[in-house]
Each structure stands twice: as structure tokens, then as C-alpha cells.
Length: 284
Image 1 (cartoon, rainbow, N blue to C red):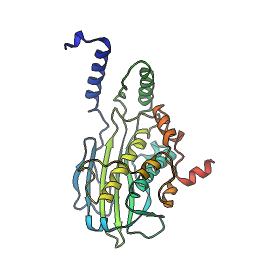
Image 2 (cartoon, rainbow, N blue to C red):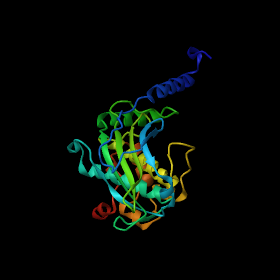
Image 3 (cartoon, rainbow, N blue to C red):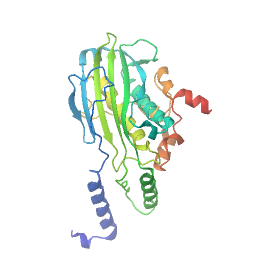
Image 4 (cartoon, helix red, strand yellow):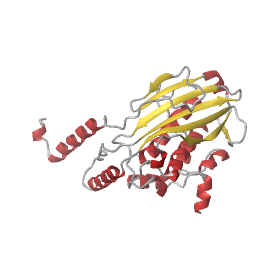
């Protein structure tokens, strides 16, 4: 049917679909760079998906033979950190740890960070592209206003999009690297905008945690093959329930439904995420 003769409602949906298709190609650009936080970069092969850039290496036999994992809290080695509030950076790094702990619990027993384990996992945030708070707020207001009248979601304004880059590795008891990953991803029009300059980095932190933990759980490239359904324990934890292992409590509870609602309203991560367990206790 010719576009000019479509009914108004159908014509509007067609326009919105075209807008979404065109704007999906708009995302923050983060080059994949070595920042020197890993013990070795040897043997890393290009990988990644449609939105994610990655280089990785995994040694399947020792990774699959491992039974226990300890997680050293994620650090931040970001140039120009003065542009970011330390508490906001802490929320991003802790969100990575929380997701890693939940994802790795699918196969490994997670022990406390001061306990010995078959594998020691450590990640470092190496770059954050700041989210433009004004553009994020405008997108939220536009989306909330349009949702009252339109039957389809409105894509985010593709301006001021943020992004996140992370390096991580898993070290065996012999001190040698068993797996490593360089990872970067920019927000796109489907990433929920938040009024915070780390809003997109915070939203993307769970994507990195999922990719890296899946690599260790499966002992292979997580970007190849069919995506796996989330386990029941990971669903419970993501909704704010108790984690499978006590060691994961160090990273606090996920915001759950409250966090999802806060995200849809464009509120900063700190409004719903209390962070690590120590910070949660201080706020009570």
C-alpha cells in the first residue's frame, strides 16, 4: 500500500519504525585499546557482537576444571576521573562486580576476596564516555510524554550517548592468566537514558559482567553460538533477591523492580542502587 494512503495510525507506526531503523546505527564510539591493566595481551583474538567490540583469550581446560572463583573488586583507571563523582564511579564498578558474581555463580562456587580459589577474577574500567545529562533528560521527557498517546516506544535522542570500556582477566593458582577480555560498548537509542554523566556506563556494566562471566562458565567465546536463557538464581538476584553465595553479598543487592522503574523515569543510578554492602549499611 502506498504510504500516502495509509491510515494515520499506520502511517505514524511506519514513521517511527523508520526512525528506529535509522537511529540504531547511532551509538557512542569507543575504540578498543590496551590500557596496560592485564598481565598479558598475548593471543587475544577479535570478537564481539553487533554492538560490542571485544578481544579475548580463554584457555578451556583449566577454566573448565576450576571449581572456585574469588572476585577482586573492580578498579577504575579512567583518564580525567575528576569529571566523575567518585560515588558514581563506585556504583559502576560495583555493578560490574555484582553482575560477575551472579553470572559466575551459575557454575562456580564464589569465595570471599581474601580466600584462595582456583581462579581469581579482576576487572578494570579503562574508559567512560560521559552521558550528556541534558540530552538524557530531554529523551526521558519526550518518551514519557509520547507514551501516553502512542502505542509504540519512542527511541532515545541519539545525542550525548555515553559508553564503557573494561579490561578483565582470570588468573589461576599458579599465577598465570587463564582468560582475558578487552571490551567496549557505546550506548544506543535503546539504552535507557539516565540523568547522570555515568548513566550509560552504569547501564552497560551488566552487559560486560554477563559477557565475561559467560566466557568463564562456558570456557569459550561468549559471542559465538545461541544466547543462553538466564538461570533462576540469576533472575532472583537481578530482582533484588539473596545471591546464591554469601560472598556475593559484599556487592549489595540489585535494585530490582525499583531500579527498573527509576531507570524508566530517567533517575540517576544512586536513586535506586545503594552500592556495595558497606555503603548500604551506612545509609541504613
